[in-house]
Amino acid sequence: MISVPDNSQSQFHQPTQFDVIVVGAGAAGLYAALCLPDRLNVALITKDTLSIGASDWAQGGIAAAIAPGDSPTLHVEDTLRAGAGLCDTSAVEFLAQQAPDRIRSLVEMGVTFDRRGEQLALTLEAAHSRPRVLHAADTTGRAVVSTLTALVLRRANITVLQQAFALSVWLNPETGYCQGVQLMYHGQISWIRAGAVVLATGGGGQVFAQTTNPDVSTGDGVAIAWRAGAILRDLEFVQFHPTALTKPGAPHFLISEAVRGEGAHLVDDQGHRFAFEYHPDGELAPRDVVSRAIFSHLQKTTADPATSHVYLDLRPIPEDRIRHRFPNIIQVCQQWGVDVFREMIPVAPAAHYWMGGIVTDLMTCTSIPHLYAVGETASTGVHGANRLASNSLLECIVFGAQLRQLTPNQSVLTQDSVSMSLLTLSDEATKTDKMLAIQKTLKRLVWQSAGICRSAQQLERAIAQVEGWQSELAALPLSQQLRQVTPQNTVQLDAPNADYLVRTWGETSNLLDIAYLILKSALFRTESRGGHYRLDYPQPDPNWQMHTLVQEERWWKG
Image 1 (cartoon, helix red, strand yellow):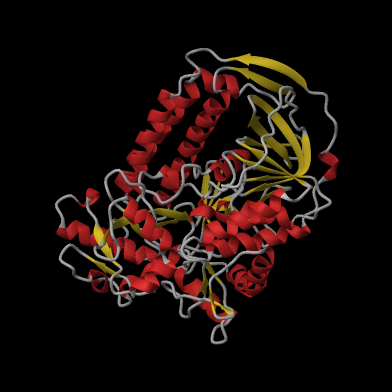
Image 2 (cartoon, rainbow, N blue to C red):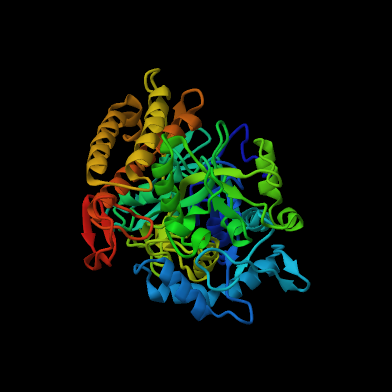
C-alpha cells in the first residue's frame, strides 16, 4: 500500500472548488488525472484509500496487438465477436488502434510488464485469436495502479482526497449542466464546484452475493449519474467470471483466465473435461459460455448446485511456468489450504464485470454537459454484450487519455458565500444495522434472480422487493435529514463515525438503485445475448440486436 499524507488538521479547511474533479482512483481515474493538462487544478476523490479498487485486483493483463503476427484489425474482429453484435465498431476500432501507443505510455511511465528476452511477453486468453495479453506475473492491475499512484502523488496540480464519498452530481438548476459534486469528507457534507467532473468509480459487483469485486465496487458512479438524469446503456449485461475460488470462509478470489490460456483444465469431480460438451473451444470459450457450462453441469450432476463447484487443474502446466506466471494465485490458494501443484482448485462463477454503464462518446462525454465517465463506469461501446478478456484495463487507459483534450467550464468557478450549519443526527437516524441488513439480503436476491440465468417471474418478484427496500430506506430519519441539505449550506455532522454512517447510507442507496436498474433492464430484454441469459428466452433475437437505453424511469431500444 502506498502511503498518502493525511489531509486532516486540527482546524480542517474544506476545499471549495477545482478545475476538474475525478471521482475514483482505480486505473481509469488515476490515468485520467495524469492525462489532464497540468495547468488544471485537479481533485482525485476516492471513498477509501488508494489502491483498493478492482483495477488493483486485475490479474490477467492488458490486451494490445503489438506482436508481428497480430494487428489492430484482428483485435477488432475478436472484440466484435465476443460482443455478440452490440459493440460500437468505431469505438472498438479506436480502442484497438490506440492500444500500442497506450502500452508504450505505460512502459515509459514505469510499468514493468513481463518480458521474454528484450520483447514484452504476450499470452493467449479466451476468445483471442492471437497471444496479445501483456502481464506482470498475475498481478498486472497492481503493477499498473501502483505505478500510476506514485506518479499522481508527485503531481503538484493533483489533490488526493481519501475517504471522501461523492453523494451526488451537482447540476446547475438553470442550464442542467454539471457544476460539481456533493461530497462527504471529514465529517462535513459540502458542495464542491468544478468546471468538469469525471466519474471513474468502477463497477457494481457488490450488488451480487458472489463477486470477484472488492467491497468498494457498489456502482456509485452509475447510480449518481442516473439520479442526475444521465442516459445509461445495457445495464443487464454483467459478465460472470467462470473461475472464482470457492471454499467456505474464503473470498471469491478470481483465478485468472490466463491460467486456462496457459493450459489448465476445467474438470468435474470425476475428472471429466466437461466444457467441450458445451462449446468446441472448451475451457477457452467466451466467459459467458464457460460460466453457463459450469452452471448447467452443476445443475445436472449435483444435488445442491447453488453451493457446489467444479475444479481447475493447473497440473498440466509445467511447474516452473506456474511459479513464474502465477505467484499470487499460488500464495492465495495456499492461504486457503489448496496446493495447486498437487491438487485441483475448487471454482465456481461469480459476478466480475459490468458491460453496461453511463453512455459516453469517444471523448468520454456523457449526455450531461461537463460530466464525463471512464472505465467500467462508462458504456463506451467497446464491450457490447460481453467483454473480451483483458480489454478492460486497456479501455481505462485509452479513454482516460482522451481527457488530455478536456476544457473545463470556467464560468462555474465563482466564489460563493456558503454558510456552515450543524446537523445533529438522532439516535434512530445513526443506526446502521437496518442498512447493512438490507445490503446483505439484497445481494442474495440479485444473485438468485439476476445471476447467470434469469426469468421474468424471478425478475418481477425481485423488482417488487427492491422497490420496497427503497421505500424503507427513504423513510429512515437519516435519509430525510441528508436529503434536506442544499447547495447553499456546508453541513457539519454531529454524530459519532459520521463519515462511515453517511458512506453506509450512500452505498445502500446506490446498491438499491443499481439493483433496480439491472433487474428492470434484464426484464426489458426478452432474449439471451452475451452476458445476459434468459431461461424463458434462451435464444438471441435479431429484433434485439440493439441497445437497452435508460433515462430516469424510461427504458427504450436504441
